[in-house]
Length: 378
Ligand code: PMT
Image (cartoon, rainbow, N blue to C red; front, side, top):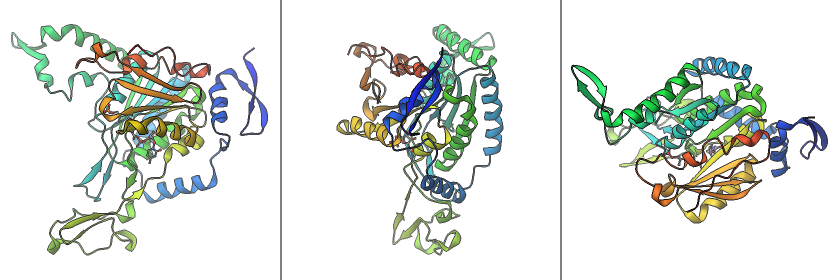
């Protein structure tokens, strides 16, 4: 039968689990410290954040869309992945003129979303507004304009001959995904919008159990300006026009001018991966990314993240080489590099995603392997 007994160290007692819960069991083996329920101090930090930083205007609309989407695919027994993509911003003013940004064009997220769709997943694509989108990414944000793919033919606009085959292929995939309603696109701009969307969508995905995956490729701010320390209006560069200090609640504003300098005092963003793993998505498979610039830090930091959050997989990448190589770090398989062979590293090549894609992740329900034979010779 499919029922198996597995020892759940966090619960301290043997429990009956369906086979597909194996990855869950494995997660508990990584870290025996954390019970699958949320710990009180985490709950407090979470509540503080969401109490003090109000939801985005479109949160209700996003919840409605996500509820319908998840419900429909749950009924069909389909796997659903939440792909996050693009960088979050930290606004310095409520009426925002200036903000701090996190680097991410959205290539990783948009490309991976296409491969997940190809492998039968339904995809919720939570992305930074105007960052790359699945399918249309092939024709946007280029050095070329999309108009360069077109030409005039007897008073009508058509696709240029040399792009016909490629665009037909992309268009067919896109139409199929649209027809089947397998792609939901949501967007964020700020860190707070991102975190609200992530939390609400994750909670809606709970009924999917282990058929839910989280693929967190977005570049998330580590420091931010809390709502109650944000000034309302554009920060003035000239002292004569500077607002008299004092933001909401009489707290010192996080940004102020001193002489001719701008002083910004940022606070840490709580580590929400912890909440996601333990509270919002206790049964889902969670894949996070780690971006570094110093090669000697990458694997160490990825391992640290895996141990700290006790989720399934950390995919490490370096800013300079992220399109050609990534390292998978998991408790099950240790450290595993995936590299695009040198001769394929051309401009038109879509990147390491075509080697990794979803195929390597989708075995998680069987608990056998997170990384299939995906590595290619260097
Ligand atoms: O979009 P591209 O141009 O293609 O680039 C892709 C990419 C390099 C952005 C992508 O592959 C990548 O590495 N994304 C993650 C970058 C990142 O934010 O790393 P981090 O070290 O800030 O965060 C690591 C993890 O901690 C993330 O899963 C994040 O969800 C989590 N985190 C971060 C901040 C925070 N306050 N709480 C968190 O839980």
